[in-house]
Amino acid sequence: MINNSGFTLIEFLLAIVILSVGMLGMLQGINIAMDKNRDNVFRTEAVMLADERMMAVRALAFDSLSTTIATPPKESAGSRSFKSYSVQKIVTQVTGKSKEIVINVSWHKKKSSYNHSISSVVTNSE
Image (cartoon, rainbow, N blue to C red):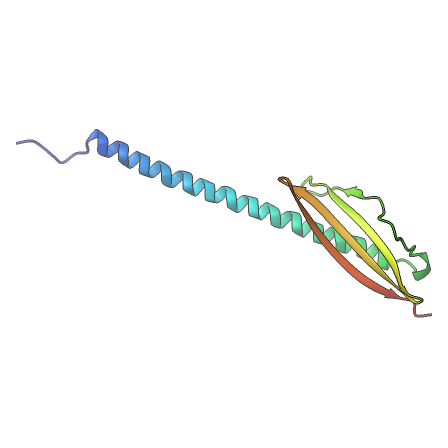
C-alpha cells in the first residue's frame, strides 16, 4: 500500500505559482494606492500655494494691483515634496472700481499637466 498523505512536487509548484500571482497583485495594488496618494499630496500643495498667493495679493492696496493683459512670466515655487509648481498671477480691470485676480498653479507628473486656478474680485471702497 502506497502512502498518499503528502504533496507531490507538481502540487507544490502549482501552489507556489498561485501564491506568487496573488502576492504580485497585492504589491501592484499598493503601488497604485501610493501613486494616487502622491497625486493628492501634489494637489493639496497646489491648493495651499494658490491660497497663500491669493491672500498675499488681496492684502495689497487696491491702487497697487497692477493690471496685466499679457501672460506674466511664470515663477517656480518649491514644495516640501520637491515638486516644482508654476504660479501665474493675472489681474484684470473689471470696472472702474473693481479688479479680478486670478492665480493659476500648474505642475507636471508623468507626462501629464495639471492645473489649479482660483479667482477673486477686489473692489475699491473709496
